[in-house]
Image 1 (cartoon, helix red, strand yellow):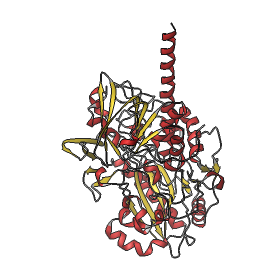
Image 2 (spheres, one colour):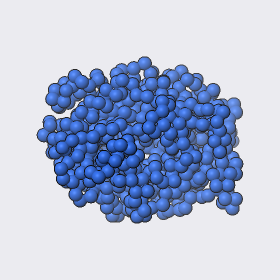
Image 3 (tube, rainbow, N blue to C red):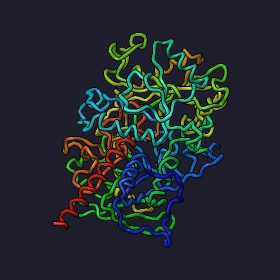
Image 4 (cartoon, helix red, strand yellow):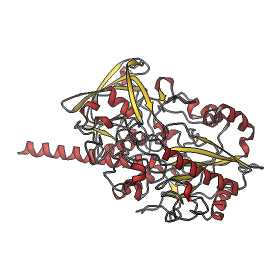
Length: 553
């Protein structure tokens, strides 16, 4: 059983250099890396985790305007990537810190629905996307992940909720006034609101306790109540023997004869070149950085589907809709990201649920649509980043009069979207420049417009005088660039997330997803990584047992 004691990260100073040989090397400490490592450490394997960033300090400064994700040094210039076609945010930066994006996420911990693992022709189109597993394969891992992250919720209210083998780790906290207002407005429209499952701890006996602040999304938790991995999981892994190397950039996976034999890194502080060997290599740097490293290492050439390595990028087609109210809807200044709507999740036709006629079903594309979920007004330090500059100047004085809804539309996996590298432009770590190519399909945008209309209708029913809408431009929900599937000619990964063509390489982050579903991906990344991690550990046990039997013979 993992302990709860905290240990500092091992640095790369000469006095503390870790041994070069490990049972497994995990690249990345986000949901994909940490949750795979959890299974490997629990199996008694010697694990090295390599993270490009460092620890995020916790304290009252996290509540300040410069605590917002993009203001912190954990979105560093040395991780910048270029986006094509160019937009207002044509250059963005990756999150690099212990715990990865989980440190700055808003805590939403949805399971994918059962039908999300089935082929939906309106979403899949001609992409060949196909999940090689079903919901039942992930269900026990969802349960384990919810327990580890202390996910709270209220089962039985979500009209699309999949089967559960256990209750939520903790019950949902009482609704705040803004959430109650949204829930009542939804019911008056014939909708079925339910509680967002949140990885936020409200019980004093389980460590940091939520104080209900209004800075959660895009901020590190000042009191360590959010279920981010740097708070909830990694310290226990360190206590149980995992080695963590921070501020270290992996630049190549050196390989020969279908195996990765060396992971080559650069110490960001000293510039020293480091090399490590692992019997198993788990790549979980994120859906942008993972294919970046595969391409930089020439591993696409070993794949049976090289055309799919780095392609089929998805990020959800999201928009934020805020209502401006005559009086402050959140006068108490409390966390109120609590209510979600799934009445249109599987579509807006008459068979999909309530409200289809009054919602204007004919204006929605056929097939799956997505999720509506309550969001809080952005803190002042965020406005300049989430809004166009002209809108930010208009909205800033009225920020306290806002509350809103996130419209999260499932997007199509398309080969046109993905990442590539510019081998002629090397950064300070000798990695080729990362270029991200992405645009939404007409269907993606049509689905988002439909959800935006429903959000505006809901906010007006709740009392909003006017609404403001703008698209989300970040890649916080990036998925799909190294997908798994049954067909080796279409999917670089097999059903266990092993990279076809390389015997000892697995990919366990959101890259592995064939489709994006219509909810936040974090919990599914966590559950799938645990599933893959257990398969790796069991495979290592079988190999060891086989060697022992051979020696006895």
